[in-house]
Amino acid sequence: MALPKIEYPTYTIQLQSVKDPVRFRPFLVKEQKLLMMAVESTNPETIVHALVQIINNCVLDEIDVTKLPLVDLEFFFLNLRARSVGENVDIYFKCKNIVEEKECDMVIDMSVDLLNEVQIINLAAAKKIMFNNKIGVLMRYPSINQLKIEDEDPVQAQVRLMVDCIDKIFDEESVIDADESSEEELIEFVNNLSSNDYDKLLSFTKTTPTVQYSKQHNCPRCGFEHNMVLEGLNDFFL
Image (cartoon, rainbow, N blue to C red; front, side, top):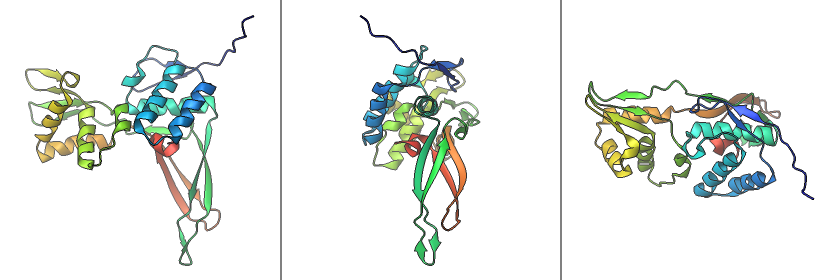
């Protein structure tokens, strides 16, 4: 006799890069195990693989999770976690306020409502950047590849982020799709920019959308007011 199949609720989410709302189901024990592996891992490749696999397992519409911008991956995962385990996640931190020449050290427990207190910020960043009146680029939000970057050289990591965000390069006569160029060609393009043009790309990468929680929390021991800001999956879970 076949074992009965349990039916699960279906939810929808509106992503920035997908026109129509996307349907998904809560994750099950098998996805919970993948999540535990991601939280415990220090390997970015393992983390990315686990997150992509969890969302792939749970999404009910045809989307390519590997091509989602990082902000969509973050927002999707937080909503998926909220619908699967619970809307609230408890986060602990120590009060570092100096009281009588010593740190307070009170452990503060804050509960974050993933559905109602987490928002996407920086959606208004202009994607078209002109270097002069003829040549410019169209930018895109960073991809999940940025979770994998481990460059020891912060400048090189910065260049790779810029390259990842370039969607098209254009002049008066042509438009070149960045995906049709090699990473080496794009890095050379960025390295040959003037300092002023480089700063334009840098400004875009520093203001790309991300998920954020921001709220004031008072220490119950010393009363110090903490402005707590969490951004990205690392702050929430990893």
